[in-house]
Length: 438
Image (tube, rainbow, N blue to C red; front, side):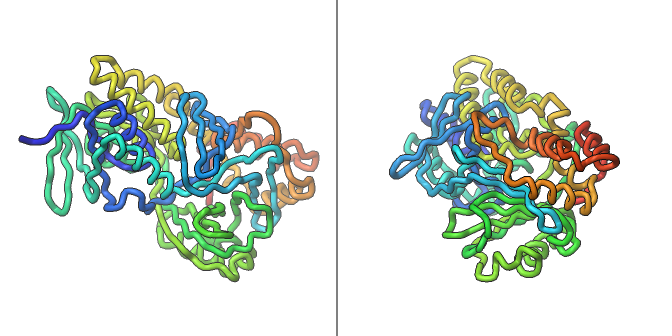
């Protein structure tokens, strides 16, 4: 007789692992399908920082450090998550223009964020799930699902063998390029915005000449004239380790070339003279209009799968937490998926509000609509004024408000007037028809 589960979870990323832990903890029979052979292996470039008292997507976090672990508090969702890996406290962020001018943001009273080890986080979640009985099937690709009168049948493939697995409910947490969403026909009505590759190389022995912090680099002098944004993130993998992340356009092969030029020939190359690469990863990022109703019959889509862009690690964990409640209620005869939809549309504001989607990409307009000379001018003025202090209570700045905050700061400079001032006003209004360059 074919084995049947209460819930099958597709994808063992942060959303899927959290959902697996909580559904199994509630006494459900849980199977997690993961295409990687090693669950905690990190192949995809991903954000790896917990924002501290920095609300985003309806949630804000704080973190308490203890001797051998940290506890991450999800205040609005009212749950805690233990993390046993290494952390780095981040008090500063930097933006560099093409000519090397630096705009610095800083906090003195508490960290802006905490950089964590993604492998360690996955291992913590996996351990919790296994402790309460969740079963993992690795090296397996979920091809799609079929809603039945009594349950769901999932088509999967393992070692060239097709498997049919049955469950009462399915949670699809298989990421931004969800095979499950595509297979079930839900992408056909989603508006496509943009698609591009992201590459990441982590180096140890980096001699970053500023207090540890997150950085972004703008300008074709940083990329040898190729299209791309460069980000520099502190890494917990080794001492003085930083990850160079490049978001670029097709053809994808220019991404590694940008990293090579940036670390060997750009004005920032001296930081890497004694550095060596220790890991590499990549990702494909696609922006589509989000699913307003993130389920179809007995299949629930969570995390990045139904999203406009990335929900970020903390957002994905939170989706997994609420998805577990939704499945448990469904199996108890309640309308759990409808409740999850309310959580999804209320907290992730871009689901129903197109202006929030525009805010998410507005920072690209800032760096695409202005010339490099104009950006150098603005960054020079910012550098002359010194670090922007952000100490205080809860910080309202996030991916959706950061562009407005930077634009307002630039517009406050008395030297900014005329055509440049008008351009900043246009960007703030959100002319989303502007074709930005990387």
